[in-house]
Image (tube, rainbow, N blue to C red):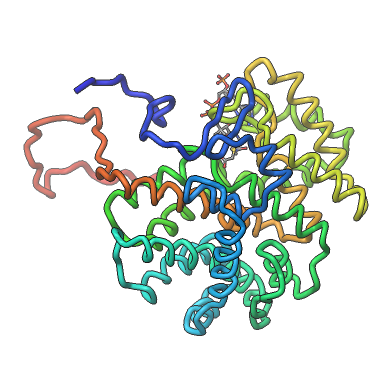
Length: 384
Ligand code: CMC
């Protein structure tokens, strides 16, 4: 066995072999099953892309229609899941609500048959169909309203916007939201996908796999960054304040949210697409000050940190788009999760096809053969 040197955060250490997606961080390339993200964003839909990610090739017309139909059919939540969500505290973070609700699916759909393709398909459909309904339901419940039922005449993205706002979704807004989902659907072995794979490798149920990935995505260094970008733009407040704010961050050595990436050392290709989408939305619904601040911020960060390969990542412009779509800031990460379920499920399926439980090693840095100290002889507690 080859013994590798220890790398904090497993940076650069291959954890699996996968043919789901590819990133070239130097050239700014992202491909799903070999197809460039730009092509998919322009020509595909989120559900078609999801099919591609999970089953390895684009569906034909009949396959796509059948997949979309199944997902429509499974969008509703059992009333007991809705009732359970009504017991969650309104002040709780929607990511915690989503993690708990996703895990609860395992209680209701407890049959596990990981070697049965029909079981795999049913779990894929159920998770893709129900996660958006859960996010929207928690939003309405915490406002004191009853969740609205999904609408069968609306597509995946449009139905989510409808369930959230209880209003007819605008066609451009729904298309742009669908593209956002495609852009966030998959991104190689990031922290949450790795978490999904580790959980999957124990052969537990798919609901536990997705719940563990949701918990991992919630952190501010991962999916949580898009919320913090909006807080940052709010704090900056004006274009004039961009450079003083940045200088202050750099002096305090604090990270600028929405910038930098473990893999990309150029601008994230998804950030470029999202910026274009933001512009389309501003054209139709009016431009806002946050966008001007964001542009000035990108310029200033590039000047100061471009030499270190620090450029906007996917989270920098996604928040601006979601805000314009009327999505509340603390739902940005749950919306990321709605999209990333596609990638997590693709990796779950790939992991099952050639499973070996994850069991890395460690470098022990502690002591050895220490005699046990009786409690009466231990050091005293220091009181200030
Ligand atoms: N602002 C300022 N400096 C930065 C930033 C940033 N956002 N990101 C990296 N750097 C600097 C860092 O200080 C270090 O400088 P030096 O070598 O002088 O000490 C150098 O760049 C390398 O940084 P690192 O923290 O070792 O890089 P990493 O690969 O461990 O971190 C990251 C990647 C995404 C965690 C980090 O860039 C970061 O914290 N960014 C802000 C949070 C963010 O936007 N997260 C979303 C990531 S993309 C979507 C997702 O994964 O969900």
